[in-house]
Image (cartoon, rainbow, N blue to C red; front, side, top):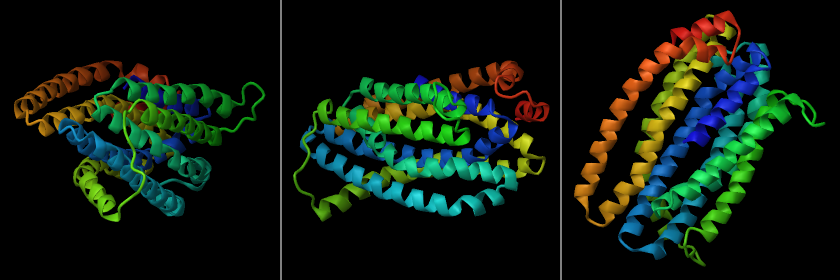
Length: 334
């Protein structure tokens, strides 16, 4: 959880040092990045749910098969997202209200970002499988590696430190891709050596489609639910763009902070999925009901606490990311 917060803070903070135009461009990309995140949430919940039930029912030999099938599904999905993303950059962001100078910056960023999506496959599958097995520490380590690489590479590539050429927005995208490459390597090692999983030597088309069906039965509803926020963000971004690109920059800061706050609840949902799956597979419905009840209580208490904190600290938080008066006032209104 902390790793994801640091990861997101690093991107927006270092890009904000480039100027309001770059911050606005990054803000325009948030709905797309969040939508891709919704797909990740869906895959995570689906894979974790299926594998947790197999672990709970002591069918460990089936976990390797489902893991391979999930990886293949993730590769296909990433390929579709890359093609769709590259083809939609201009029409989508014109629709959202980006002007031509901002659109040029968006192109430079997303053309690198999209090609790097394929490297998300490792943590996309490894983390939920490891959590389903009861190992929460290794996925946390994987995300810490990703956040650490990103926070180190961002300033080096964006500003051209240590003799590296100054890449600006392309540097931010490249840092993300390289961090994902490192995470992929760690994920492969983790799933191979810490997952205690035996992988099948052959694949059956019937078993493949069955695994995809079971993953998507849980994944699609989770994906759809998670997609509501980025779709809403896209609509609001379009409305805010009518007041100028600086307003979009301010809204981007506010929505990213809001998104980071909500990551705690997303992490809670991710953590409770294998817990419910394992106990469901073991027939312990009493523990399922008790776990859900405590999650509901925590969510309400956390939401109220954060609302009060942000209401008080909003001016100071917004000022960390931009000194543009219009951007700050827009962030405060949000």
